[in-house]
Length: 359
Length: 133
Image 1: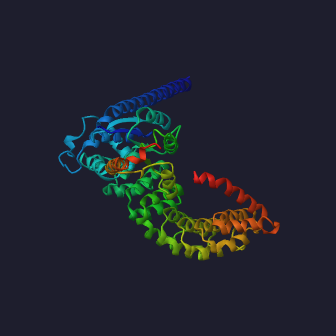
Image 2: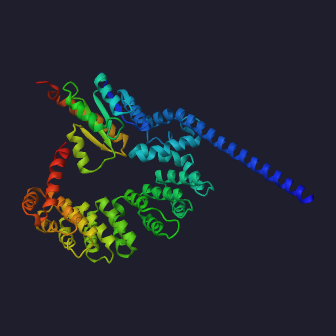
Image 3: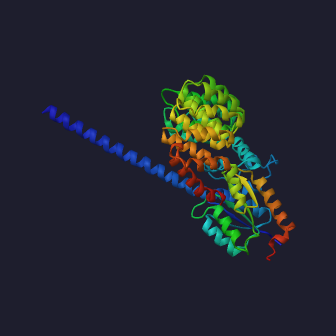
């Protein structure tokens, strides 16, 4: 009897708890949704004020930038959110005005402290604001968030470091990419490195020598996308000597994007049939991008490569090499052994693409 | 006489900021949020200058620019193209479509205003361009 009574009480208590929790969670969700709606309304109301203020403010008048002279008395968080969204779109005086405003109103210091919040969205937003304002005092906290347990927060921190334009953050970004647990995706780190701009090229070039293969690959790709001409020689060295296929392939792609003629020799050597197909394809593409006619004979020979993807890449590269490349393709269409299918396809593609580019 | 400017950009904040800047510089300002309504506004308003975003829904800035240049009455309207596309080929395509100037995002609104004045001054120095033969 007593056991049955105890069970009934337990079930009642558990049911009450479950219902209570469910009601509390619904209330919290409703409260958050209502707060978000209120902030949207506030944002709509203050947006014209802030933008008009920004359009008219004199960036050299310190008094105007005083926090007490801020536009309206609207909710500070809405203003911060609006300014945080504007910062990545602007350069020059207007950007400096907004950054100074955020600093003087204490918004950036508050964001620095919010990076320790228990709520992941708050941490991510705080890192984004500090990054958008390129506020160096928040750098240690942003770096710390690269190891956050939440992947969205880690990505926000990586993007923030990129926007801060701090080349000294490169080891931390690459460290976060290499981390066995809580790593950050190659695309996020790559974009962050790109945002750092050409000033980061020397540090990235140094990394090519020592880092793990995945990092060497990412760094080579990034240097190519940056168009870092000073990386041409180190990338040629990587193409010739790296022990892994992926970093060599990335180096070939990068050299094609950078476009220096010094790379033609190492790229032609990479067309050798003993090399991995992905590398041969990348080398052919790169030679087409560089556009040096001295590669025509080697590319013509590569059209006979047993791997049809390599042959096709060589044919397309020839199509990009001007009249000499085109002549070579036309010659190949007459003899099946010279890679006729690839040559025909490349000529057809070239004829269709040229008018589109001209437009 | 007051110059008329038309801002066509799907980014609400940039559109409003540029409109305020132009307004405070003495322009009569209109704005549109996409290429299609932007083109209609150009035909209706005949602005002196158009600040035109490249990437927009319905009709891109590049298409707007090309269509604008194909209409003889609108061909002399000055156009500044605003875009995040920074590749040489993109810049070439922008000018080939008929843009008078090209500014890469993120940009300095102050620099943009300087370019607006320069483009308009150039258009006034070269009135022969607006003549129809």
